[in-house]
Structure formats: C-alpha cells, structure tokens
Length: 350
Ligand SMILES: NC(=O)C1=CN([C@@H]2O[C@H](COP(=O)(O)OP(=O)(O)OC[C@H]3O[C@@H](n4cnc5c(N)ncnc54)[C@H](OP(=O)(O)O)[C@@H]3O)[C@@H](O)[C@H]2O)C=CC1
Ligand SMILES: CC(C)CCC[C@@H](C)[C@H]1CC[C@H]2C3=C(CC[C@]12C)[C@@]1(C)CCC(=O)C[C@@H]1CC3
View 1 (cartoon, rainbow, N blue to C red):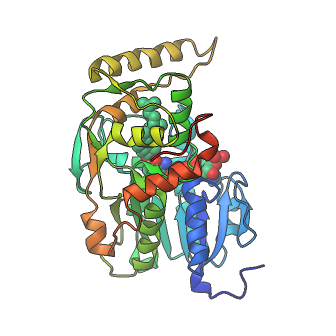
View 2: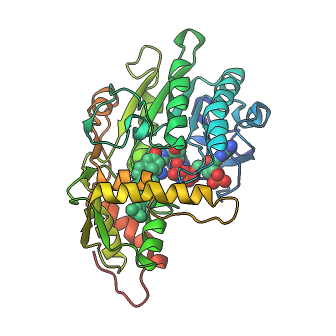
View 3: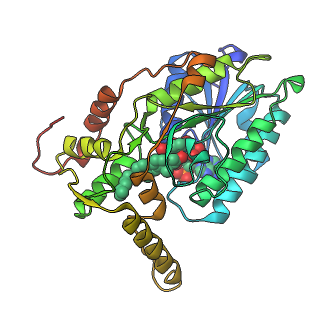
C-alpha cells in the first residue's frame, strides 16, 4: 500500500472524501504530509495518492478496513441537504454516525472530527453573531438540520479522554468554492430559467458564506489541537469567513461575475415564505402522480431572507483559527473556477 512508509500518527481517514468539502480536505491533508484513506459511497475522487474504500458508513464492517491503523478520522459525509428523504437523513446522519463512532473505537482511532453545521441552531429567524452556546434549534428548518443536531450530540457526547477517544465538531456555514455541486450550479440554473430577478425581503440581511479552503483549515487545526486536556475536546466550533455579507450581494457578485444579471426587484419575505410552504405542500400531495422540485423551498427562502451569521471567536481563541482566504479573493477564485457555467457570449467581469 502507498501509505506504508509514512509515520502511523500521520495516517487519517476522510469519510465523505469524494464529496465537495471532502476532496478539498483530502488535498490539503496530502499537502501537509498526511497519508489519507478515503471512504465514500461512490468513487468521486481521482487521486492515486490516496487509498480509496467504497462503502456505506452505516455499515461498521465496511468502515473497518478503511480505519485500520488510522489515528484521526474526519467525518464529512451526509446526504445532500436539498434531499427531502427523511429516512435517509435519519439513517445516514444519525444511525450511520453511531456506526462511525463504534467503528472508530473498534479500530483504536484516537480523534474524530465531525463536520456539523452552524444551522443546528437556526430556526428560520434572525441569528446575529450567534455563538456556540446558543441552544440547538427546537424546531429545525428541515430534516437535514434535525439529523445534523442528533449527529452532533452523538459525536460530542462520545468524547472520552479516559478511553483515549477525543471528538470535536466543526460548524461551517454556506460553504462555497471550486467544485461545489450546489450553491453556484443552483444559482446559475435558476438564473438561466429567468427566476433570479427577485430579492426576498429588503436585501440587507447579513449571512456567512465560507470559502471551502477556510473550512478545511478549521478542520485540520481542530485535528492538530485535539489532545487530551485541550480545551476543544467534546466541543463545537463555528468556522466562518468572519466577513458576514448581505445574502443578495453575495449571490449578485457570483452571478455578475459569471455574466448574469443581479436580482433587482424586491418581494416581501413573508409572502414568498408562505408561497414556498404552499408550493412544497402541493409538490408533496402530487408526489404519487408527478415529481417537481420547487426552486424556492421554505428552507431556501428562510436562508435567503433572514440574518444568520455566527461568531468564530471561540475557534480563534481555542485553536488559533483565522480565515486563510478573504472573501473578495475567494469569490474571485470561485467565479474563475466556474468558467464552464459562464453565460454564453459574456466576458470575464468581477
Ligand atoms: N455545503 C455546505 O454549505 C455545508 C455543508 N455542511 C456539511 O459538510 C459536510 C460535507 O458537505 P458537502 O461536501 O457539501 O457534501 P457532498 O454531498 O459534496 O459530500 C458528501 C459525501 O458523502 C457521501 N455520502 C453520502 N452518504 C454516504 C454514506 N451512507 N456512506 C458513505 N458516504 C456517503 C456523498 O456521496 P453521494 O454524493 O453519492 O451522496 C458525498 O460524496 C456534510 O456533513 C454537510 O452536512 C455543513 C455546513 C454547510
Ligand atoms: C434560489 C435561491 C433563492 C437560492 C440559491 C442559493 C442556495 C442554493 C444556497 C444559498 C445558501 C446555501 C446554504 C446551504 C445550501 C445551498 C444554499 C441554500 C446549506 C443549507 C447547506 C447545508 C448547511 O449545513 C447549511 C447551508 C446554509 C446555506
């Protein structure tokens, strides 16, 4: 195996390593000299420097091979947040995470770093500079968030220094960057269908969008700082770009950068929200007969029309976190990476 010559303490596994964040994390770990096992349900990563293990994380046996000799596990697998499959979220995010913990303990893994989400405290109303001590959402906005809460609780409560098993949860928000399959592609698709004309609410609501390389940096710092008696054991940390930006300004900068028009006309938030709720009920009722996926789901409307930005002071203080890439540069790099989605006939503009 390609990994034999590297020191054992530098061997880690990335569960979900074929995904957007996972791939960036794997690349960064390799750059830092770690040897990396990737575990995922599909082989989306082409990198001959990693050992790839295909399997379902709900299955402890599938996981065992990938965790052999590994000291640090990053768990960043999840069904796509846009799915409406409640059973799948429950099975993968909750039951599957318990399987991951069991497999880690069986394999003698010492550190487990979970990718959680800042949305675990978001209920659809404003969160301004939210800190980690905010209570978990009592009414999470969707099944995805509901199961991210269950998952985070499970991982944090399994932290047990006496058994030499240390855990930490990273809560990013609105991850974006090259190769993201949802934010930019959904935006461009919506713009192409002529639906990106409206701003929901007054357009002043500040939101965190976090560049993927900063999210990766937060994960690796957490792994390196996770030691017996360190302050971060069993805790959750917001990792953001630390530059909240009006939601619609961020979207507009991406759209304009790719040659599309920025949304201009304002619609009242509550009107759009209740329309989205009705539309999702209609799509649910019609499910046996026809499938249609509304662009404006209640979850997206809530995310687009409220303030939700989070303080990352705790990560700065406990792990020395500071974003590596500022927002302007991150947007520029992202726009450049999506040249294939640029509007036909438009020239590059930032
Ligand atoms: N993107 C964002 O804005 C944010 C994401 N997060 C969290 O970050 C993490 C990574 O997200 P992101 O990279 O965007 O997501 P991706 O969907 O790109 O990556 C997740 C990966 O996990 C895989 N996976 C899903 N189910 C299983 C399973 N049962 N067993 C093994 N692998 C599985 C997926 O495969 P497949 O594609 O085939 O399903 C995919 O390759 C997730 O935990 C997410 O909740 C948190 C905050 C914000
Ligand atoms: C059609 C438009 C109203 C919105 C298009 C953009 C959206 C696709 C994205 C804007 C904010 C994003 C976001 C997430 C997914 C993609 C967006 C809704 C998450 C739900 C991904 C998973 C999380 O943990 C939280 C994210 C919050 C922001």
